[in-house]
Image (tube, rainbow, N blue to C red; front, side, top):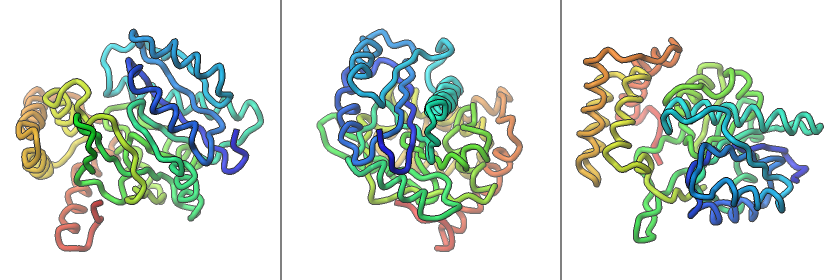
Length: 301
């Protein structure tokens, strides 16, 4: 257990048995180990839970538990609630043991991080009193073993797969938002309360598959469209994202994204219950991108 800058992690896991050895090995190799890594098994049927129990028996900082709710859907609001619960549990468990965690983060079950990952994230959070959320940048592993850095990663928007919070910031925003788009919403809530957010552009985390493609690109980009409607993205941003998604393989990604957004709009589907989040995505995000176009807004990595 690390005695320097104590931090905790949580990971929702469902049927990730093939990739888990690499993920766990990368965590074992960390220069700064977590006080606790709480993996929440979300109904695995491929032996993931049993294998993780074996690892927990030999690693004192790893614990594995069952999810507190059955998965009626995977991803979306369900995973948001699992991550929120996992963070709360991890913080409470180490606090009960007399350890006060400085930071708490999420790491997805398909992400492999370098050995200096958490030492650097802890250092970044400690660099300024108001630095509240940080993350590494996402590099996706292709089927042939190559690596591709995903486009349009903003330096002021930490990524959900390795999102890492100063506990004081997490408390200030009321915990991880329990609804779709929770990672972006957390960044928004933090910034509205005066906290800084940073994506570290030279710290790369490798995701074993491209973002949003676990259940196929069509389903993944349609899910992005539904989330965009839920969060209240301005129609001009929907158009811009459609074009951006269509500019890369698979070319149909933009179509799946736009169709899902339009379907939700026509149906008048539910929107985010948090007025701060809707107001930000409906207006301020559009202004930010406009400022970026003229060199006065956020930069992209």
